[in-house]
Structures are given as C-alpha cells and as structure tokens.
Length: 479
Image (cartoon, rainbow, N blue to C red; front, top):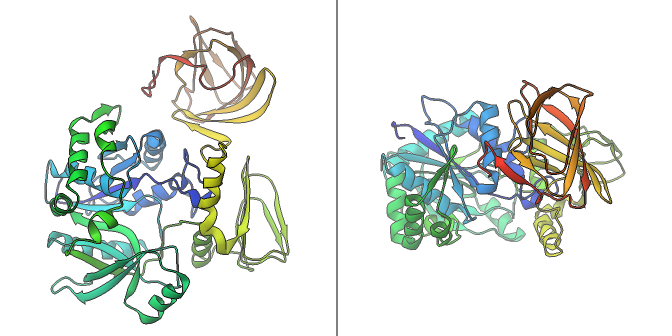
C-alpha cells in the first residue's frame, strides 16, 4: 500500500441528523450535493486527488452505505486503495485505529491524513499547503491537527488553544489544550482573546506513532481493532471487519481517546473556508461566504419564490416553495417531510430527530426515494392490495434474480431499455412496452444500456413489503 505518499483515510460513518430531513440514516449528508454540484464525499475525495502527493484513498464506512460509497467512487473515477466496512458504529477512534493498523502492515511510517467525509473547504490550495506543513510535523513524530481561524463565536464546534511554535516546523504549534463546545459567552471570550481555533476534526499522523499512542492510552481498542482485522472477510470490493471483535472497541472519538491526552499534539492554524456543514445554519454560512445567497441573503435551492424575506435557508425538492415575510428561518421540503425552524436553533434539529425515532417513525431512517446498489425506487401510490413505484436502474446494473410468494408485478418502461428475465424467457422492452411478472415467477430486471432505465412498477398481492423477496443470484452478494 505505502509508496512514500500521504494516505488519505476518509471517515464516512456519520449520520448527519442535524441536516434532517435531507440527511437520513440510510442516505446521510456526505452522499448529498449540499454545497456544490457534487456530494461532500466526492468533494473530499477530489480534494486529495493527485498522484504526486497522495496515494489512493482508504475509505472507512458503515456497512449499510457500502454501495453508496462504491457508486460515488465510480462516478468520480476514483479507485480506492481499500474500503473497510464497520459492522457497528464506534466513532472515529476505532475507525482511525483500523486504518492505521492496515497501513502499518506494509509501512509503519506511512502518513495518514484522516478526513471526515462531510466537510466543505473553499480554498483547496490553502488546504494543500497546510497538509504539507502538517506532514512535516507528522514525519517528526507529532500528531498534527488543523485549527480553523474562527470568524464568529460558534458554539457548535470544539476549540483548540495553541501554544509555542515548533522549532524547525513552519506553521506548526504545540497544542496547549482542547476545549469542548463552549457556551455563547465563553465562545465570545475565545474570539476576543485570540489564540483559539475551531477543532476541524482533521488529522495527519504517522501510522506507527498513532498506534504507539493508542497502545499507551487505549490498549483495549487497539486489541479489538487488531482482532477485527485479523478475522476480516473480503466481500466483493470491500473488507468487512469482524463484527464481534469490532463491537468490543469502545465508541470514542480520536480527540477523546488520543489527542486530548497525548503530549505530542501539534496544530497547524488554517484559514481555508472550512465548515463541517453540521447544521442548516452552517450551510447558510457556506452559501453566504461562497456568494451563493440572493440579494436578501436567502440561501435557496430548488423551485423557490421568496418575497420580502431575508437570511433564510429555503430548499425544495421539485415542487414550488413560496415564502412571504419571513426572516432567519430554515424551511426544507422533501417528498415526505417538511422542516420549519429558526435558523438560530438549527443545532437542535438532532433532538427533533431523536423524538421522531422514539415515536417509531421511519422518516429519520429512509427517504421516500430509497437507494439500492442497482439504483433507487420511490413510492408513487398505494392502497389495499396494491402499490406503485418508480424504479431507476443504473447503466449496466440489475436487480437480483428473485421471486415473490405473495405478490405479482407489472413493469412499464418509461425511458431506456430493459432486459427482462421471466422464468426461462429473456426478452427486451423499450419505452411504452410492459411485462407481467406472475406470483412465484423467477425474474430479473437489467439495464443493458448506457443511460438510466426508468420503470413504473405496480405490485398486487396480500403482502407488499420488502421482506417478500427470495434471491437466487445477486451480483452484489446479497443472496
């Protein structure tokens, strides 16, 4: 794996609940184009592209998101060094530990650039300059992080206080201390006094030094991650960490497990247009700094008409969103949910999502549009004994060879070309053609073309849920 270059390790395990209803557990914010034309994950990958400086990225992600990661890598044309699958969420320290162990197998001195997958950085050149400075510190045995110059008394971020400059390491300082998210008055004091920076959650370390500190400070976690790697199983293009072993690792951040305790923490101060896009208010800040707000300071996305309204986040999803006489609000409309809240309370949306989860609602978990390895589907209508969906099958993709015991299906091609398998038949359907799949028939739908295939599927039967699928063959390993 190691070739003397910096190894980007992309941590893609977050759920992004404060950006609900756009971000949901099964399709969280890192996969969504929130601040630009590509997703936050794709922006992160593009930021560390360049064979002269960076090796191929290693991605650590939630098992349920593996095909989303694979598809976004494919669209971007990036070949990952490896994709490690976390069987259970355990925060950033175990993820970083597993990546360090994996890279250290080939080169204990390999430099790891640990990056969350859901950050926005406006100044890539400034970021790369800071990476070079941090790499020099990491090669000298320091655990380097990046401290963002604050421009407001933000209460949603942790802070880093810098100490003296490190001799011979341009742009690097020793960390005096890490500070948890402060209240408003304390944050104002940090901003006024200087010497404090936002904790970006990005790190550059050598694999060997990080593991030395983890063995000293969190030995049980290292042992659990080591066992999880030793018992890992290759699954298509993914390396699946052993579930039982990985579950024994404590769920803790790398800040808490290592950085707040080590005496080798260094910080590189940066001013690179960084935000973690952690809330709707943060997204408004990004739009404002990128000159993407309208003349009244509204950050609008979709079909939006705003009259006599100022400094709002307004986001629709294909239907008209019209607002009149509102200020400093968040109004987000999706196919199955609407969020309205003061922009100043955007940090509290996560608590609202917790309330929805406690009520057993599905909206925190899934969108009306459900993503699958082969594409996606979205409900159109439903009633007693039937439901209709719109299926989108990606080019070259196919659903599994399967059958249903409780329902029959009707497929109508809206756009594209479909290759249909129905028991012993294989035939092609074009736009405006249809096929009937009887109850119990083995069937498969494939898109042999180069453009997305759009199908309207009508299901009829006494059981219409996704459990009524018996798979026989599946290119995604889901038999």
